[in-house]
Image 1: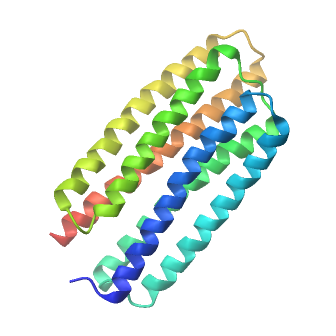
Image 2 (image 1 turned 90 degrees about the horizontal axis):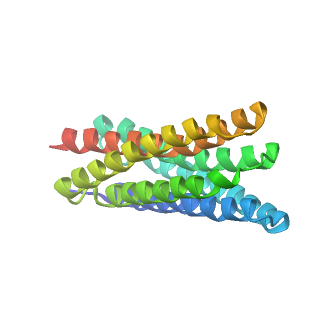
Length: 211
């Protein structure tokens, strides 16, 4: 049976997850403006990304306060706190990639533009699968496990795409320092799905504990 505090906490977690998922779509928008040569709009949308990450942070804090106030049985409480913190790290990863672009102004080679965009698009799919997993984790154990498996499947695919792209970058005729920066950009994008998989793994454990 789910009490009022538990219901409020889960509503907050789902709101938080939706805001975090929105950060991945915002990453795609910011990236397209960056490679499209529109610095003014890029800066506007990069600022919007920072605002979205702060908004997600605020919702996370409210969820944590609800949990600390007595939502969920003590044996499960730490699981939900850890879940919330992990979800927030997904948004942190999106902001980290945008901040790196803003600070370095690294040039994206034409041969890499679409491949990075595809990596971001697949990351959006991965985080959306996580959003669905989070939304049903207390309602449908079997469906939650299926969505967690989908997250894992997408993360593995992204890992391979990331490896292939980083290998290709090292073969491109660009300056060594730019190669390092581009490698870092791709790695930060790849880390988003890594964190998403960590969240889905946590959900599988939580659901199993509840029997």
